[in-house]
Image (tube, rainbow over all chains, first blue to last red; front, side, top):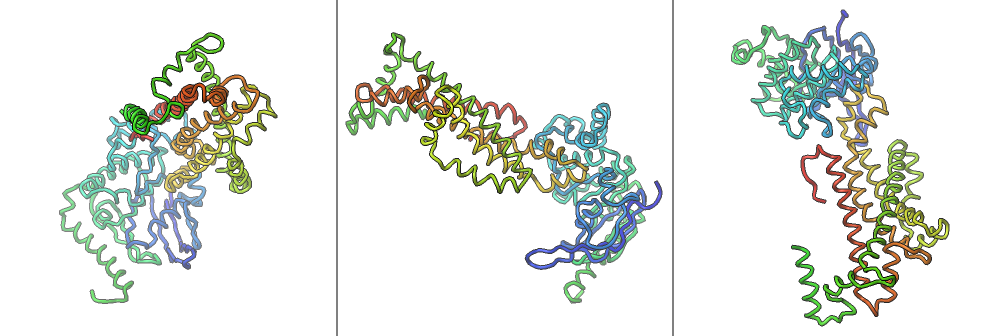
Length: 265
Length: 252
């Protein structure tokens, strides 16, 4: 399948409530090619999670068009073209680890053989094979997120949507899981759309970093990351890494300054 | 230990306030009551056991019936807000009528067999189940629902694989309440004239002859509460066996 995995043009989203109308996204246009790892970073409330929701057909845009995997977002969702990971693992307590990973396969009505083998393979991939009969409460936060990632990959999706999946974890676990995620992602051949608050994480993981402006969200700048792959921990001390972080940070600062009213630098 | 404290308070209070035996029999008198001979020549504890058995059976059947009705109502309410708005007021109203007033009516309609008692037990059972289950079916995590949508699940799949399992803790809470309520329902059902078996009958007779044999009524009360306690613990055990994935052992 050629062509961009995500093609968003002029996406806007307004929320109405008792307090008034909130413009979450103003006009976001983005094209994501197959095999890319795109991070979206921006200040709180800039609409990055909303945009992810629109791509996943969990939120309706109030304007603009979006094509996912060459179809409407709704069709892509119904065809199960993507897997999603939220900030909380959202595992079902009454299912064991392996049963949680099996869930998408059950919902899609896959054959018994695949329902047995695929979760095992996925748990091996995320390094949790020994925990497959454990219950979620017996696992740490980082481990639960790994299960959540395994589940998202169950149906070999073309697209992986992640909404600050490591946000609730400590920095060391986060760094380790960043590497894990890159390894898993490279073995899965999915395209990734990753929302984050962490500049270092965005730069470390991505092919391009999309910097968003404060609410109403629009794309401020896109920073291409030219670090070689596979990424390693050593790169975190690379001068180029710091340059890129600075570039992203500066874009964010500009937005913040503009939002506050162009105050002191 | 609590039992010892209660026993001590009982006898202590009796001694301290000089409570006569017709108001508060000695504990040993209540115990002795189980071993006296009844009208037909059998030991009293056997008679009690038979009647307790009747009551227990009526409670269990009523409990099952009431739970089934409660479940059906809860699922329909979760499915259709319209149905809930329409039926809930009636459901609530049904519980405000004192069961003591309804019992004779039910016995008149359905006869004096075990069935009318089971119906009354069901009457007291279905309400907690309906209310708790309806809440449980609705109280699903927003992210868990979003996840189901993201996995393109049908409504039926969402119900079976998400709503129902996550409502089970709520269901069991209701079942614990209903366990004791169904015993009460069964006993109340046995009170109206015409019933021949069950703890309600024993209690009525014991109350009638209270002045001659006060210990009898206390013994009947003791047995009745034991039935309720046993039933409650049976439900608690069933919960532990079903909800094996629960990390904390909820005491209540």
